[in-house]
Length: 105
Image (cartoon, rainbow, N blue to C red; front, side, top):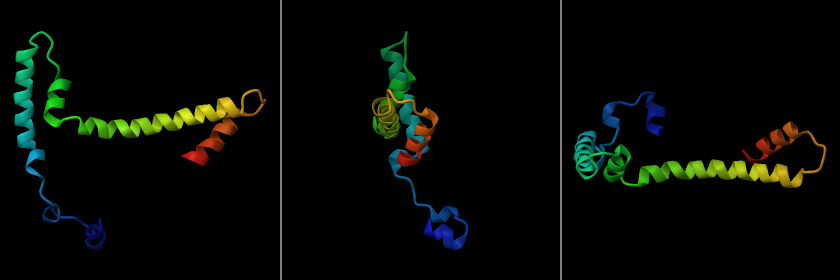
């Protein structure tokens, strides 16, 4: 980031090389092997998800799961605050939601 800010533009030689296990040719070959194995194991119901999980592992899926859990937790806390603290009062709910949104997000 600093180099692109100083130069104004990044060039191809400014980027670092990918590790060999992340290169597209190796990943596609590995996915193809896993897909053919999946078709052999489950010829009636092959799953691309299972083949992809065997290729990449669980790490990319977990990296996507944690931000989703974070958002769900914030929404749940917002719901609890509105429901528990403001139930029974004749307050303006959109105003409360706006206030909570500015405070916590």
